[in-house]
Amino acid sequence: MVPFESSDVKKIGLGLTLFGVLFIVIGVLCLFDKGFIAIGNILFLSGVTLTIGVKPTIQFFTKPRNYKGSVSFGVGFFFVIIGWPIFGMLVETYGFIALFSGFWPTIAVSVSRIPIVGWIFSQPVVISFFERGRPKRVPV
Image (cartoon, rainbow, N blue to C red; front, side, top):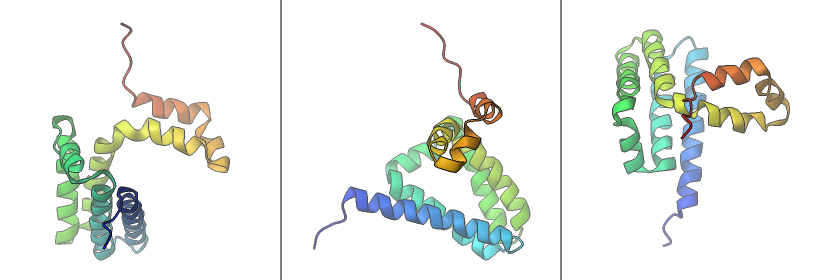
């Protein structure tokens, strides 16, 4: 038996991440169904873990600058589980933005290369929105 190659595990991780996002969207469209949202959260976290690895995932969520986002995401997930999905999703959204705010410029560049959607992301208003989150470089 041949073990999974690294690229195969990453493909599975990306698939799980996308299914997690899909389940969260379905949960919100079904008037904040806590089952769909909880399954989406589990799939999203397991997908991220498979995509980047267990150790980097733990390091990412436990960095001191990511504490607010990690705690918010966890507390929001807890609220979804106990039956308060609207409040839980609000708290999770804050945590998601706090955790992944450093990736917005990279995502914007990637999305700007998509044919139709790229035109929207190349507009000055959208570019300035994503530039706000980027740290300023200090000349040496």
